[in-house]
Image 1 (cartoon, rainbow, N blue to C red):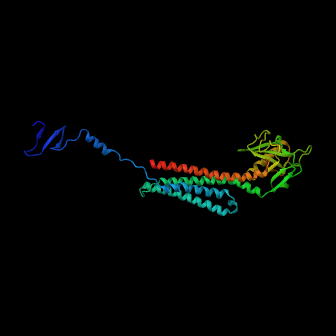
Image 2 (image 1 turned 60 degrees about the vertical axis):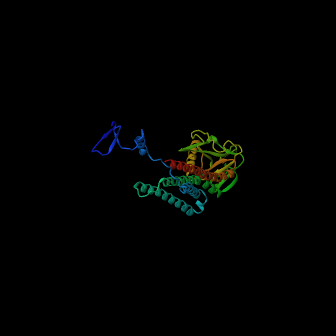
Image 3 (image 1 turned 135 degrees about the horizontal axis):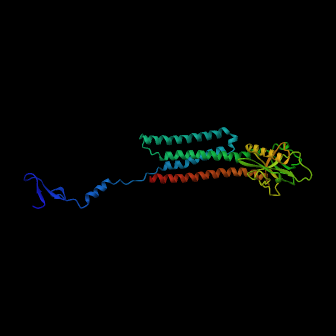
Length: 330
């Protein structure tokens, strides 16, 4: 019969010829287009599932770097550094060891996963090690800057004496070697016409503090108003501190020894340029209220510490959120 073919002896299997493919007699022919569809499904990639977030790991990555940052910056910023340097040093060293251990753990876990020796996912280990290193570095920088610019000057000046009604014409610098705050006599002012600057990366500006005594010149110009980057250096254009305030007669002594040497070199230039002599130069920030200016060091130290820690916490929180999104998607 048309459409059938007999193969082999009588009673053998009968086959249905359909489009060149043989199927057993009585079997259902494949649906049109069915075979290619099943092949596509078989070759399709299995659906990807997002990685499960380890909440404990996320919290550790958020909290631990912040604690380390606060500990290191506090140990380097607070008076504990002078009162108990051993304790402050131990705190910093322990924090450094914890940071190194976290970095080593991240490297070790990544290497073992690469070699197939562990099934642990190294993502949060790497994140933790990197942010711990960032935390220690940032805290160390904040603590050192805060200590040298704010805390140490405040502590040093607190131990020095305060003098009032000092006449720069009749008083010599060696008489006030133990003084940190000075209120000069009425009529004292900064002589900006004889100012000068010494350049060494920054411009170290100086101008003599004189008194309005007609016809009387000091034996030695020992009192100098100072400032950083507030003059051109070559011309007398001193504009540091409260130089323009007619009521300002106060001086707050510089406490940073590293800057003092450059101001002394500026005074030597002024001696040569203006034919003047300074045997024992003392350097002061020219201010209206030396006491309030001194207290500003303490306020700036606290402000730097709290703003630094708050900024790091905000940055760490942002990094953790980004890490969670990246880990969940990839």
